Length: 373
Length: 91
Image (cartoon, rainbow over all chains, first blue to last red; front, side, top):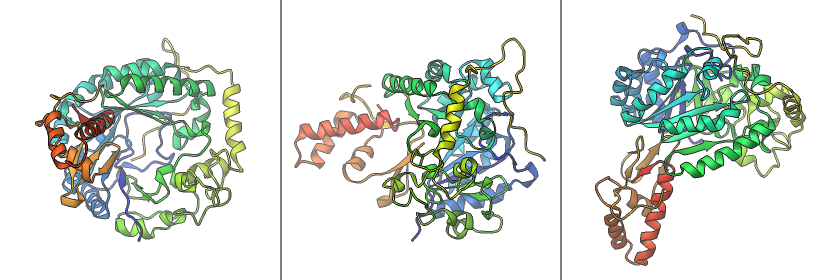
């Protein structure tokens, strides 16, 4: 029998006050008017718990943009789910957090764009950094688990030590050094965001020193960005194997970026039960298990570890979702990744192009806009 | 962070909690879940912020009286230290 999913990632809205240039939301975002209602989400959470889901990750967009967030957390908690709020912090206040914690919120994950305010705001496309710093003590006091997520890329990696020092001063339980993954807006802005090899190597050293220094105080998670890794990441823990994503309009996806893959049919929780979707939906069946695998995956000893990498990346980079993730050094299409990496490393473009003194550099990248109404 | 002292009072860290009942009881925390059996379960269910490390060790030494008492003490300390580094336990 097919094991049920362990985690549900609920993108409860694509609305967001930030415009981060690396946002993993699709280029075609779900309009506010198409969002699932409170009752529809509550139904999804109950079904998820029955299917065996343990963790619910409430994300977006900015989940705080939903005025019914406390009701959603309350229902998720009542259904027995461990509830995680992934937030930019914008919209959070003591009067918003207290009821959320009372409703059973277990964990808050607060993202930062940089250690330096002007550069952080430049990456987010709005003024947000100072507020995030202010929110941290309130989250600490609230009694939930507190994770700081530092999203890193070429434009801020040179400040990594400073970013870790900032995180340290805010006393989270956990710190994630999250390299940008190249989907959605990040793929569009890849040439400005992909770090250099030197930055990646330096960051590994800096992280390992910090891990040792902060052991027992802050648990640091960091992953080598897959463009520089030898083997691909086990995207989503395997396609349709452990996790599912529901987008704001109720569309069920095996991976955040799966919408880019042509020919997949996605079903929605408005039309089908979560159990049916998990077991029968075309999109989930398509790359589940090993039958779809080409060589070199099919005979590779690592196929049970990385599951052939990411299908969306295979499509975005190699044009074929059923090919080995080109991030894998064994993939026939790996030269496509090497080419991008070589281009970025040859570029004389310095890291950190943050404007100083009011000048604007818009040509470097595209900001993520707001979804339509 | 060193191993727990005799007087330390281990407890689950913020945002880490039990779910389910009886055999199906699991420990939930931000990035995962632990299904604990045997010794691990016996240790963690005693991490209530009331019992001291010394008391927990004493109780475990009774529970596992066939094992060398010093080994039980060292195993419990090592287990709690590892979970403390994962920020699942505080003491």
